[in-house]
Image 1 (tube, rainbow, N blue to C red):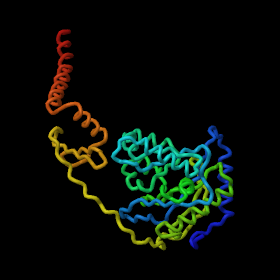
Image 2 (image 1 turned 90 degrees about the horizontal axis):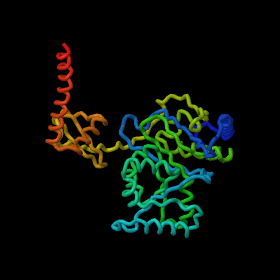
Image 3 (image 1 turned 60 degrees about the vertical axis):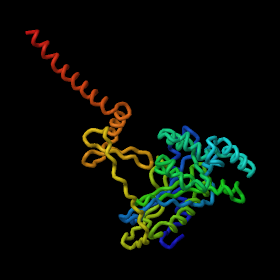
Image 4 (image 1 turned 180 degrees about the horizontal axis):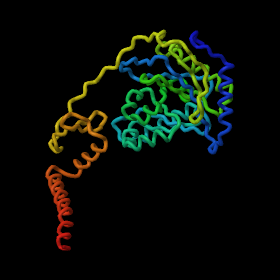
Length: 344
C-alpha cells in the first residue's frame, strides 16, 4: 500500500464481516447478487474551481465479479456503414465470438442499430436498464457518449472497451467483463465504484477491495495523501469505515491540469412564428432551446407548450385561436350577468 494509506488486510476483513452481518438481517426476496461499493472521499476536490472533464479509470481486480444471472451487451462497429441492414454485422460478430471459445455470447448491437432503433429518449433509458454490463468495440468508444447520452454516462453505465482484433478474443472479452470502471466526476469530493458483490467469498471480496484501493491511490489527483476516508457499503446498508485521515487538506498538492476548453455557443436565431420576440436554438444534440426576448432560457414546461403550438399551428392559426379563446372567456363573463338581470 502507498505510504499515505494505513490499511491492512485484517481491517478490511473485519469491515466486510460487519457488512455481511448487517445484510443477514435483511430478507432476500430475489436471489440477485447485491453490489458492494467502495466509497472514496477526497480532501481536496480535483477540479479546484476549474472546468475539468470526468475521468474514467479501468480497475483490474484479482477476483471476477461476474455471476450466472448477469446480462451483457456488446456495441460493435458496422461492417458496411452504407448498408442500412445491420443483421449481417450482428451474425458476423456472433460467429467470431463463438469461434473464440466464449460460452456465453453477449447480445450484439451494431452502431447502426443503436442509431436507428434506440434514438428516442425512452428507448435509451430502457436499454440502459436492460443489461448489467455494457462492452464496446474500441473503434466506436469515442462516438458512444454522444449517442448514448446521460442514461449511460450520467448513471455511470459506461461501456468497457474491448479490442476486437486481440490475439485472444476470449480473454479480452472476459477481462473486460471482470474490469470495473472507477469514475471521478471532478465536481464533488466523493466517488464510488462497485468492486464486489455479496455472493462472492469473503476472501475474494477482501482481495478486490485491497486491489481497488491500491489502484485508486495511484491515479487520483494528489495521490494517496488526498484521500480523506474510505468506506464500503451496499445500496441499502450503512457505510462501514475502512480508513480515515485527520490530516489538513492544505498539505495536499494537486497537480496542474488542463482546463476543459469552453465551446462558444452560437447566438439563438430569431423565429418569426414565436410571440413576444422569443428566440429558438437547436443544439448539436438535437435539443430545442427557447429564449425570452431578454435572453432568459424558458422553463421545460414552457418550452414543451411552445413547441406543441409550433407543431400544430402556423402564425395565423395561433392568432385565430387566441381570438377565439378571448371571445369565449368574454362570453362566460357576460352570460351570468344577463341572467341575474332577468331574475330581478
